[in-house]
Length: 123
Image 1 (cartoon, helix red, strand yellow):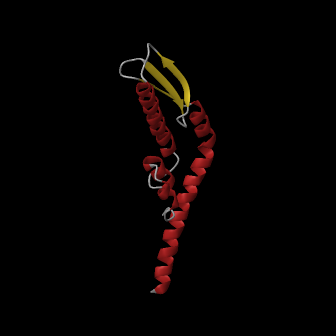
Image 2 (cartoon, rainbow, N blue to C red; image 1 turned 45 degrees about the vertical axis):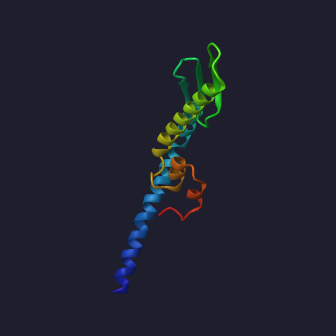
Image 3 (tube, rainbow, N blue to C red; image 1 turned 30 degrees about the vertical axis):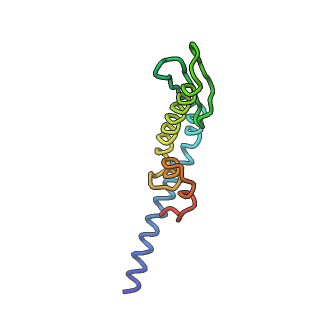
């Protein structure tokens, strides 16, 4: 009975290993394309009143800001934040093609909780 249980466990471990190895291979093979997409990513948001247009890169860093009339600081900040939020969503969408949604990295990208990265290993 123990031999059968050991074989079942070994088969399950082997299947999990093959799955993870496939994910790593997909990530490696697509890494160049992913890096190019991330480097080229630009997201633009415009305030409701049209006085602010902000463009950010994949990291949410401001790369362009256009101001019309005299917008308030709060409108500028909220427009930049809107662009940054959309950039984060697009980065998550790009990464979703390479990492399983249940991975700690993807969960961290969704919830921003550092504890997510420090918890139990992926299973």
